[in-house]
Image 1 (cartoon, rainbow, N blue to C red):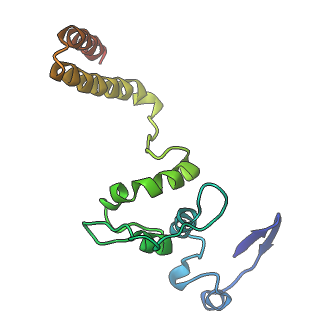
Image 2 (cartoon, one colour; image 1 turned 120 degrees about the vertical axis):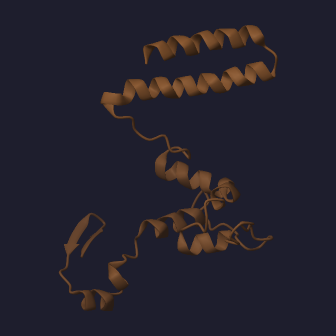
Image 3 (spheres, helix red, strand yellow; image 1 turned 30 degrees about the vertical axis):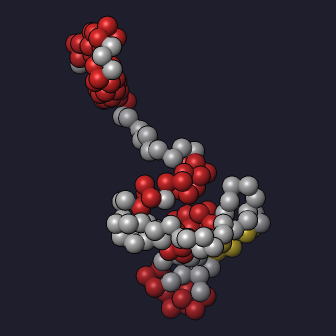
Length: 156
């Protein structure tokens, strides 16, 4: 077990039984500083200072699909189902911005195939814009977008 506190590193070698006795490591070596615990702590902190959110004073927000509440998330740091991400979006966005810098996953593109992948992504975006232009009956703009799509497709 390695602890770093105030810049001082302390290493302790413990068997599983002694580690449980220390209270630092739970059953199966589930450390008390696991990611879901960090998310739960961040979820409970307001962005302005470290004041606790007043969760539970008003009607608690609850996922209609699985019944998971924001109180449960603040305790366990995990969501109940994929629909919880939409239900708790307003509360999760600030937490994800603090952790990742952006609430939307962007990912990385490998260098070898990056050119083709970015072209395909751009084509998908242009196709979406083309459909929007057609729906708005802006046919001149749609024709320009169509030509851009054809140019990009020829590069693939």
